[in-house]
Length: 181
Image (tube, rainbow, N blue to C red; front, side, top):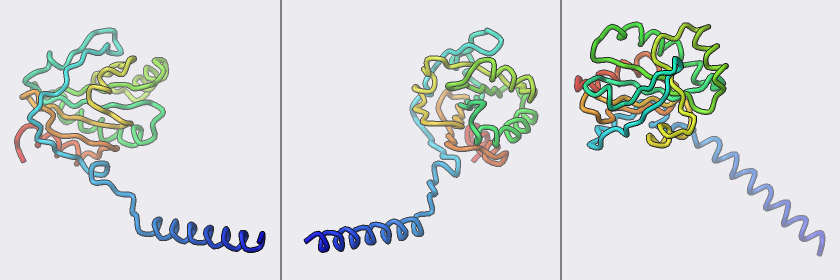
């Protein structure tokens, strides 16, 4: 009897391994909402929030109405966040002087000293803010980082990116928010 149970267990184990291999080979792991910007065309207003910047000032989304606002949720310890940093830097340099443009990096779950060191070392020029109780992150339904939300001048979320953004992604999201697509 114990021989029979061993053979059954071995057979079940082989079936499980084969199914695992088949699934692994047939699932490419891609999610169109993760690899590409998802343009929502939302009719709902973007959730308002108020956060404290790294310089101690308060910034609220409602104060930026009429501008295209990029909200980038990130952390210093997040590898994809660091991967997208050069694209964010170049994008910001291209658009920082436009009167209808604003960019806020909202830090999730990170140490203030690490953020300050990173901002100083990398010479980050856009507004960096802390979200210690995750109110902004929860309002936008973030599940990780980096995540970028673009709020159009009308106060509605025009585009979302749930992974590291490239320069092309950022430019495409800007055009979508400004109604140029």
